[in-house]
Length: 455
Image 1: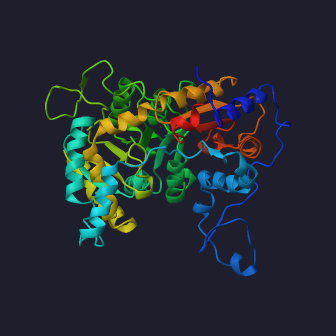
Image 2: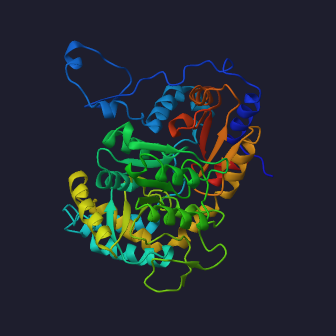
């Protein structure tokens, strides 16, 4: 196996040392900088005065999780000077890819900026007809989705907020599974409060527990569960869910009349093909054709399933902020969901930016093969990260998305360790506490190009 530079060597050294370590070995404060937002943005210190104390802010927002990526960036900036002469701090924290957007996307944006007289104007709330038409074609060919309507959003996070606001009333509950994607939990906390959140367990294999879900649905208070959320491939688990599992989840939610939100942000990162071609053909029960459909990444068209997608990862359009929602138009209930969600869309974003949709349309036209070639280059870095984390007893992930989770030795504080990794080893990771998994860390392996990993 090839040898690897920082951050791989740093992680290897750090986790070799953690074996047998205790909480007393790493005693630095976990996150010592309180996060406070002001009109000028994020500040580094709190301020109290009688005037400010008289101006209340929302209890729901105050009890919402802090945005961990911002906190990690603060810690990185605190220690950046120390690592300037050693190549800088390697961030394996935020989920980003090392490659740039397709050249065709950037060229399309440049051409539009020079000649498109409508670029500065509003478009339909649900997105331009050109992009939505291309997405409907893509969804049928690549995901087996038929009879759906599209809402283009400012990223997949806005798509999820749209769903939460459309589907949940005050007394309703939304299920997520621990370890969870922190922004999903934040959306529920700040819009419906902690009472709107029901957190379920995940097995050691990173697969959410559907037996637990069934017991919740048939138990006391099961009628309050209105939404179930799954991420596939998983963030933060890094696990691709098998197609048979997904079909079981769809059937379970159908049985109890519950909405199922499928966050497919990492659809192009199904490394083992667990939900792709796999064993060949797949039956799509909601297809208008009573046949089988062969697609790279299957999604359910059932009326109670809402599928979320993103351009941020596969096509590296994170800064353009483009995601989209696919909702069945086959029944009156799903059509009503779509119409009601347009109210939310109009309130939050009005519409997605035209310039971003131009980049997205060009990316769709570039196609899945372009993405697959880039994703394949992650193999070496993924194996290196798995090797670096091997001194630890439990590792989750590697089959999907761009993450691996690892369990720290008993007694180690994951937030304190994340701080120490930045200061002492120049490597940033996400503490598992922010994913509802204290004592674990999440490591992203897609941030660096191969030539920065390999010696």
